[in-house]
Length: 54
Image 1 (cartoon, one colour):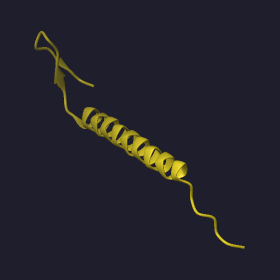
Image 2 (cartoon, rainbow, N blue to C red):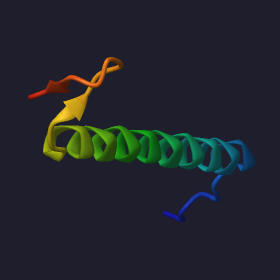
Image 3 (tube, rainbow, N blue to C red):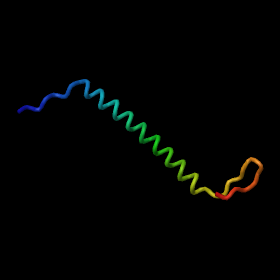
Image 4 (cartoon, helix red, strand yellow):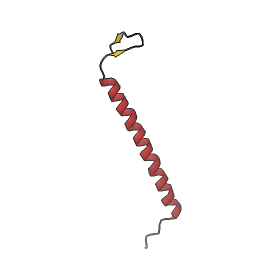
């Protein structure tokens, strides 16, 4: 039994899915990085200059 040739529609769909997956992975990486920076940062001053310990 011969292997069937992939249809052009499936190639386009795969390319679109790959693009959406990469954008989603980048968004998750950015949010994770911002979370790590926020958690590991030291005391933060509020608008009045008072130190807030988190």
